[in-house]
Image (cartoon, rainbow, N blue to C red):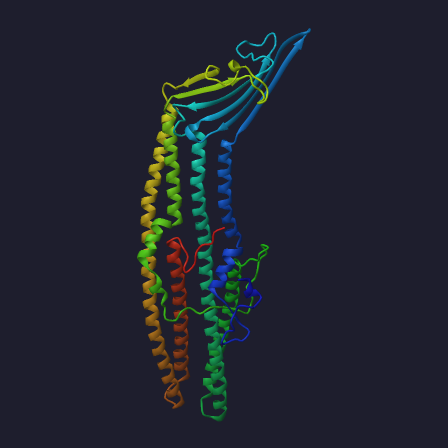
Length: 473
């Protein structure tokens, strides 16, 4: 799009040599590439990936080490050195443990005594009750991945909203520009007519009062033109809100920029496939995708809360050895073997489970809320697409009728001019016919602007863009 501001990729306007067409495609490139809100939307995906990374951190291996020693009055009370490497596993919520303890001294608890050679261990900690099917760390990771899909949908929604606002302002600018062009042409016509009547009045061919009426029409249209000049400037400023440089600096729409002319055959309607749009919206509308992601999130939460109703039964076991290197000799009875082990069982079970049952019921309620939201959202989307399509059909009919009215009004004006030349009409009637024709042309441009905005609205309501894919970053 920036090529527009370098005046490289644009075509000269047929009416004004210095004018350059700023097309809807140029606007699209500018908005989707450099608009700050669009760039901000792309950060949603990055933020979701950071949450996944945080959840993966719960599966990071952890190394723990502690050392304590007491010596007093020539007595070696104790020397305790304990080390453990814990590796969380996805399967069954188990933890792989590697340990090396070196505990000795006169007052060391015999239960933990290892001797000066120390004691190594290789074992597992496995939950056979609560946490076997799903535990907190697996639930957190799954939910983070689900919310990444939510972030993707939210990103699309934000981009579509910015784009739809830009399209509406573009066609408002188009309508204001066309008003300005039509009134400017009206000023020129009125001025030419005024000069001609003045000459005829001097020659006595026309009454002098006609020159006064012609001058009033010139002044009236100049007033309208002045008003539209301000409105056109303001419309250009509003559209400039969507134009940004690569360095996040605001870019102004050049004064020589003019909007593109829409298809005069109104064939865009034939390209709008109502059934396809509704099917797309049902499966890919960002609001639907966001609700689906929330539903999956609460499904995961329900599964996790059901798991929390089970008793917590953790079994741990380790094979022990005095070997602290692989090269040194170690007696067989002190090496890894099934007779050298350490096992334990830990059981915890709340008797009433009120907190756990309450959280499960809360997750179920939230899931039902999402289901109801989905039902309503699907219906709202279908209805808004249908109503927008019906209005689009209505706009096309009005445009076709307006084209016929314009042809007829042009015939009336031409006939009135011929009658005036023959002295059978008045300047008042000519001005009236011409003003009516200009008003009808302005009305057509208003309909055409509304028609184009309604096309953009249909695609926006369906959660997509017209003739374009939403870029991924």
